Length: 152
Image (cartoon, rainbow, N blue to C red; front, side):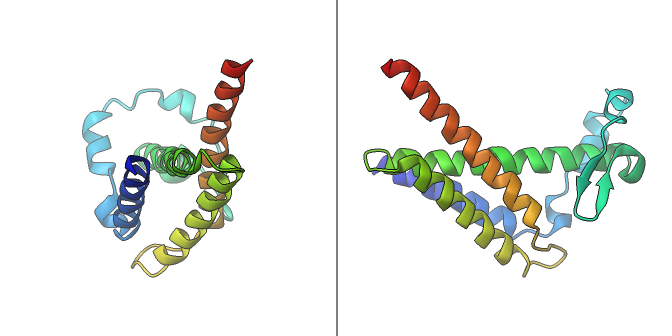
């Protein structure tokens, strides 16, 4: 029962965060304070990340906006990885737990992006669903791999 509560907690956090507008979620003011000296700007300036029909980079968006972009995508990856683990551990004793966790997380990500499209200033993004699903695959994959190594 505790495992389902943990999963539910992750889903509540997801629902709250995706209901917020970009202005409510932005961390740029905090980044400007914390990273005022712009650490690793030179190294990060070589990164150019294709996203939607554009390229996200320091040159295109600016240092703080680029850092926020990286943090937001990492949050997608880790957050949905945790949701997948929540499903996996709640479902663990049944067959196909890993598949159910990954497919279930992908479905949650798709539904979340759709619901998010009704939030002012936000839109549905298929690439976020891919990042979310990749997080699920990696997190569940690592747990399954560790379990198999321990059994060997």
